[in-house]
Length: 75
Length: 272
Image (cartoon, rainbow over all chains, first blue to last red):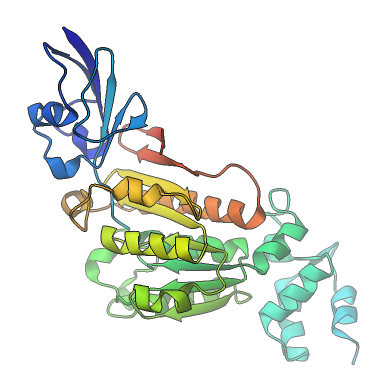
C-alpha cells in the first residue's frame, strides 16, 4: 500500500478536510486523487508535492504529501 | 520677504515642520504642498505628519518615498486600501487606474465606497480621499481600463506597480507588461476568508505559475465573494512589500506566495 498525505487549502476544505492520509494499491495521479475528492479540475490551481509545484498528471509515490490550492482571483 | 528655507528654519519645532506651517509656506511662496514637502525633507527636516514613522522610516527614507512613483491598477477592495496606506506613508506620486464606478455591492468591503460615492468613478473618489489625507501627494486618477495598448503610458516612470485587479486574464497581461517594462509587481488576490500575496520582479514567473491552469477569468471568489477584512489585510501586506521595494530594505515575497486563511488563522508560504 502507498500512503499519501493530502492537504487541502482555502475553499477546498469546505465539506472536506484540512489534512488526511489516503492509501492506494497503485501510484495515483493527482487528478485521480482530486476526482476521488470530487474537486473539479478548474479548482486545482496549484498542486504541490512535497513543496514542489507539479502538473496534475504527476504520479504520486509512497510517503508523498500532496497540497492543493484553489484559484484565488478577487480584488 | 525672507527666503523659503529661512522661513521654514524660523518655524521649526525640534526638527519638524507642522502642517500649518507647510500650508502657509505653500501659499506664501506660491508653491505646491508637495514642493514644500520636498524642501523640508531635503533640508533634513520632517513634516510633522510623519513623526510616528521616524523610528521605522528615517527622514532620508521619507525623502526616498516622497520621490517615488507607484501605480495602482484597480481602486476597489485592494486598491482602495493600498492607495490610502501609500498616501499616509508619504509616497509622493500615485497613479490610480480604474474605469469603474461605485455600486452598492462594493459597500461591504471597499474603503472608498460610501453612499455618497455610489455611481461615481472610483478613480475620482480616490483622488478626493487622497487630497483630504495628504495633499503633498501628486495624485493621477486615470478612468481607463488597464490594457496592453495603454499600459506603457499608465506605468511610465513607476518604480512599483500594485495589482488590485479582479480578473485573472488582466492580471496576466499586467504581469507580462511589467516584465517587459522591468517594473516590480506586487500581487494580491482575495476570495472569502482567503487571500494571497506575492512580489514579482522582472524575470520571475510568479503570476504565470499562480494562474497557469486557470481557464476561467475569476477564481473561487465568484462563488464566495469577499467580506470586509480580507481586502484590508491583503492590501496592507501588499503596501508593506511596496514600501520595502522603494526603500531597498527587508525580505520580499519573491519567488514565493503567502497564502492566508483567516478562518483557520493560518499563513502558508509556498515556494514557486
